[in-house]
View 1 (cartoon, rainbow, N blue to C red):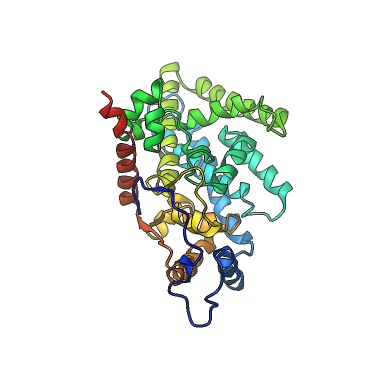
View 2 (view 1 turned 45 degrees about the horizontal axis):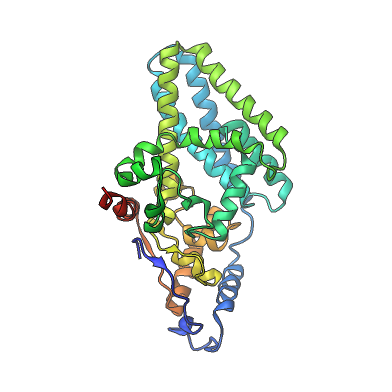
Length: 360
């Protein structure tokens, strides 16, 4: 499953009938397959809110952020600040995961508190537009790994399919030849890219609150850059930014890349029902509690895509139910380790960039 396969064939309406238990209706069409899974998940109580979990988790992140800022102020103009920069890169990664959960209403069931929390965490603390990212991420969830509809696989500097490679021009054509080797170096720029894209998105008609979002973004960077250049000498300030933003970008990439990269791509015109569209294009990452914390629950990517508002601590139990259900229907369900997932993603990048290397 973990390769550059492109899904082009429309599955048979009866593909999902393999392996069903005796108590299930053999005549059930694929369109209702997700309804049955949803019923099982709801019966297990996995969609209810977990306020205590998020209070503890967000409280720990807030404490880590406060500790990082305090250490920065205490150390003053010292090269030891680079250790603080590295630690704050991890904290910023956790802030990004918190903003993600708020955007999906995993924390609050109502829109307004979710939005307020998202604006504070994403714009004010992280320097990323909540509205822009939420719009982009919602489109990704609707059509994961779709060549034309998923913004996360839109050809920019990297190409994600051979079709995109053959059409690549400019920088993407050069980078695409070596994109597997350049992937992690490019990730060092991802944090800055998110901020740049956020400011650029403020002028788009789709942005609902450009003034509020813009004000919070400016406030973030006034405090961020102002604090750095007030406390540190210019050389150390730039070194702090390089370490902090570089490691932050690598952290984000290490969390999000294993989820879909290297899984089948979907071409225009391919018809898949919701259950299969989400399961076939997603990969789960095994690894226990440490991976759960590191990836903020996104290692259960299949379950997260099927039930985006499910609170993080319920995803592990949901995996057991979903994997068992997919086995009943004969739907491939893929999971692997973190290092293996990165190898598969890099292998995919190398494979799809092959047409560009052959053209030389």
